[in-house]
Image 1 (cartoon, helix red, strand yellow):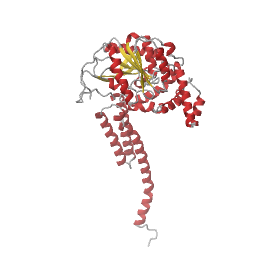
Image 2: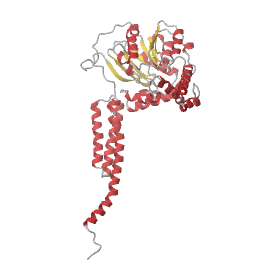
Image 3: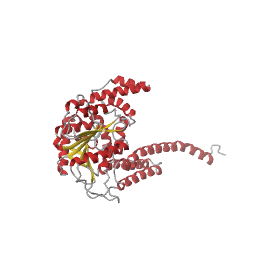
Image 4: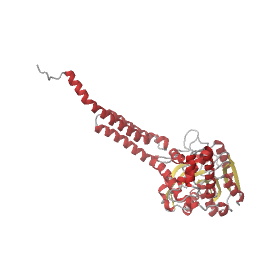
Length: 440
């Protein structure tokens, strides 16, 4: 009798021991592949939330990505099967990025039945301004309405697509044109960052103004600025008053250096009062503004974040990368370029404003001016805006106080702004409001 004979039960046990490492290896590789697939699928899954890509273009990409994940699991024991599944998900992700850049758009203006409103306009467009390609967003219920040029949000580098949502309620009264300035958002590559200066912004804004005047057959238009772009707005009406009915701003900047030093001291005092020694020490290491060098954004953000906390607003370090995610007209690359543009444009341009003081440099303006000012704004200091307003000579001027801090963040402030724009600003165009159906 052979004593070395292996019984069937023993053979099964040996086989199971040999297969266990192999199974564990497959499981780990499958788990890693699935984790990578989930990450790759995010641009596809978020496409309808983050961009204006139509659902009919999104669904095939989603189905391709999901099919790839299913195939990855079903064929998990086959290395080529896992690779093929992961490849299908990667292909869907790449197609989603391309679709976001080429198919994202702004929603149409519709009537109560959901049909496009006759005579309305809604679209993101590429325009030529002084030899460079730049982008504008044009929206309005009736193209016969006066034009309101939105110069954009804060920065430099905020761009007009960034805050265009705030002006949707005025599309029954104005054709609202929001401009992504060179160096940000969809116009990120319009000019080298090193070329950005006062002359570039003013010249391009004038070129855009003239383009809009000709296109919509209007002698003059309105302009609106916020924080940084309120500076551009003052420059425009100072140098070219014949082009504009009026200038409107929120968060008006007056003297950047004085404004920033006041904000720095407030932030430092607040941190000391709160016992936040770590952040207070960081501000002391940075010292008071103005800052110089290749990276001035960081020390400014350090204290501006504190001011926004004091006003109950989002920190700049959070808002700058977050808000572009919800701009439907931006593709994924535009969203990244917006964040890059704010940082790079700020570093290049903001130090150029060190000697700005409109109380010395723009005491006389030849157009009506409307300043919407937060009573407790400590970003664009309300006290400096009031000083400037009191000294300013203009054919018409109003300082309209808003509750709380900077901007139109609350429904109450928005209502005050919209009401004044309809009843006080728009009549300056001398045009009757055309009768049109209400949008949905």
